[in-house]
Length: 634
Image (cartoon, rainbow, N blue to C red):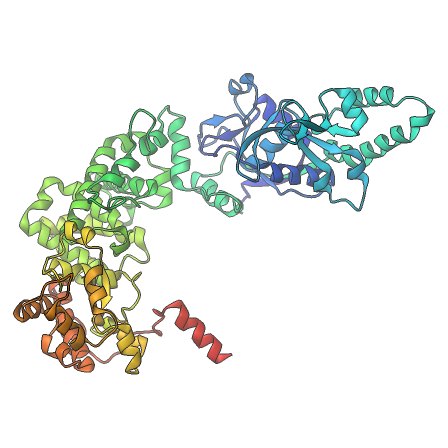
């Protein structure tokens, strides 16, 4: 029978905070620094003061297979750093750190104002307001500056002075820093308000102690305690499920913490330091064209990088198992999934980190050869991982003409087969094994041999987020498409200098005036890459009109020889005669055939032109169209 690897038990808040102070309870090093603002701290204090729940905590017992580098909560004494923690706090860092600093540490608290200004605060409970049911408890919590004096009128007028215990007694303001130890403060309060006349005030404090302060002393927090048998993957999954309020924990954070236990600073490798640029910064700048904010690799994530390294490491393990005589299902999988990343040894990371980075740089060069320059025009961000891994494996051999042609065929097969939108991890691992083997004389990889492009897919490519849509645009530029105004081909200099984007051939305004539906005229068949200035000349008029304008020229643009314009149009796989006659239907049918031929050439196989319908209904419509349909239906 399966045994649960966790327990849920209530723990006294005071004891948990004392454990934070001593170092018995610490944070794993992947936990980010404490960043709660003043208002959230006040709300937390108010909730505990009313014995309201503030959410469960999650801890992980140390000493098991998950070895994270620990660090004390912010503000804990130096002695806590020398303590070996009994448990690590996986969820609840901000709540526990906030309560530790305001209620136990006894020092001024670092926080942030609603205006995002860093400040220091002491926190107090207004005794009268805390006992008044007409007052929101949050309003009874007061934050004051380090000198405990609130001033207005640019510091000239004192509104509240709590700079001594006597002034706290007089103002009936109780310091949150003493919510667990009120005896001495009560003695001073009683002495300050001695005498029969002040007996109601002394009784007021006793009521405050019973109804408010004792809620702190006896407050219990549910703690989900993961035992030592919990796996790294389970820690990652569970953390993501419970950490709904913060940034989700990813494999990079966990691997960072594990490597830190061995003295390696993975975060510094990626993000760099004041003295050197990290890998993230280097990749952002790789092949960054003039005029662009960043290069094509700017969105490569730290887990993408680990994924590439993991493909190499797990392939090594698989090869070692093959050499040992293991076969079939006995062989370990080549993988870059989360479990594989969590099991990635530091030695393997060090072995392959440079090769992986070199592979990414080669991937950027490869994508530029395909006229893919901007992240927004990258068909699949996910396909960069296997592309970089394959190029890293090939080394300089990828530049050989035969290899490069096959690599391009594999790449376009992934794009037009739309294969990297799901099951990415398994697809990446399969391609990493099969593509290099294919280049060395083996069989075609499944991504190439099994892919199918449907001829009617061109009619439904309407959204620029579609991988195939972006791929079609890049293919046109790669094939030598020229701008209709300047006649320049779209290399990266022209691309960024002329602000090139995808534009309609038969303009939207003309199409709408002629009763055409967006589902027809918005397809990629009616779009092509053009410069911003050329598109301004086109405007919203019929093709015959804007072609005449291009030929005639104006004050800013010289006349254009008709023969040159014809050639520019043909470079976009457009029949000039059909544009001159505004023959929309004939144009769409003709260009669909031409684009289809271009895709077939890129993929190295014939497209499917049969009558069998693809499963499902096309969902590639814009948001306005969806909302319009909903309104009509209603």
